[in-house]
Length: 136
Ligand code: CMP
Image 1 (cartoon, rainbow, N blue to C red):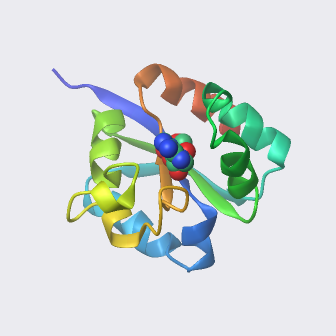
Image 2: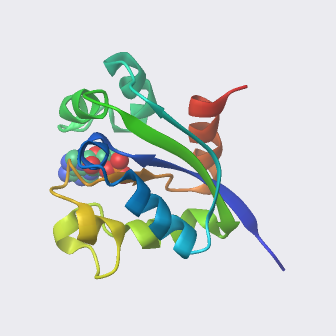
C-alpha cells in the first residue's frame, strides 16, 4: 500500500551562505522528493526558540537558536513515499563526522551545529513543523 508523506526540510544558514541551495535541492529531487512549497526567510531568535522547543533543556539550545536565526534559511515541504524516514536517511547522521557516504551532511556538513540541513524526525512532528512555517 502506498504511504505518501510530507516532511519539513530546512537548508540551514551555513549551506545557504555557501550557495548550496540548488545542489541540495537537486539531491532531494534526484532521490524522488517533490518540493511542494518553499521559501527563503530569516527568522528571529524567538521563532527559532519556538521551533526547537523540544530541545529547550539541552545545553546546546541557546547556540542552536542563535545559529538558526543568524542568516537566511530555505524551508521546504517535501513529499514522497515514506518521506520522513527517507529524508532522514538522505540527510545522514546529525554529526557530519558520523554521516554515511552519499548523504547531504557527509557531503556538505561542517560540524554538528553547522550540519547544513534539518528534517522532521517523525510524521507527527512533520505536521507540527509544516504548520509552523506554512500556516495559510
Ligand atoms: P537538527 O536536526 O536541526 O536538530 C537539532 C539540532 O541541534 C541538530 O540538528 C544539530 O545541528 C544541533 N545540535 C548541536 N549539538 C547537538 C548535540 N549534542 N546533539 C544533537 N543535536 C545537536
